[in-house]
Length: 266
Image (tube, rainbow, N blue to C red):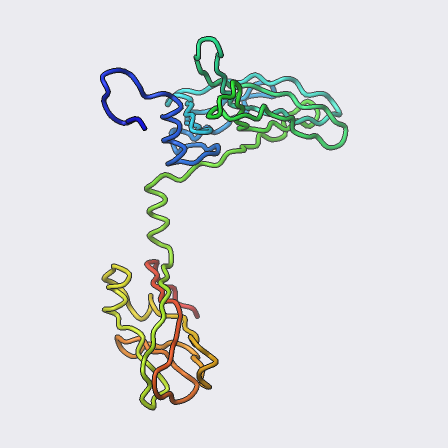
């Protein structure tokens, strides 16, 4: 075991360790990071592709087109009556002698076809495993005759933490529960109050409109009655049964809460 994010008196953090940290937080695949113009392509002509600013994370390796700039990639001509797909990759390389690493745009030319074109293969590797070449496919350039018909972006933009938190904030949340209330001749039993739901979900804004329960019998073989639904009575949430119940019985279900705005159905 060795310290990575701490002072040791000499340079010690390796590119492999830095990439490990990024793989642990972003993922081990290939992603465009939310930055600049998100590596957006712009076809200047049938022979030139402009790639706008942004960042790519591939197996933890970060490469960038600097903000306020763009890269230019030269494309080969198409041929009349032929279809072709070229692959634009972000190629990682490492010099085995010096250990110097780099990332550069490379165009892999596909085979021509009179019918259906197929994209060429990239060099599949994993720089974290020590591979000296590791391609990250970013765009497909589709030719129809001499013209480029489409530039297809192959990578999605990864959500940042602010976006993930915002998305989670609007998700419906569930808490599974089981309980054994005691029936006293009624056809309902108390499940929870608004105050209890607020406490369980760690919130303060539960209402009968944005929260409730999905319920079922917890032991159907032990009783002839069955749970039909849940209903609010004022600030209390009750399980409703198809008949009067007496003694102890078990119900299970899911409490739910939705922080999103409640819609009104017409």
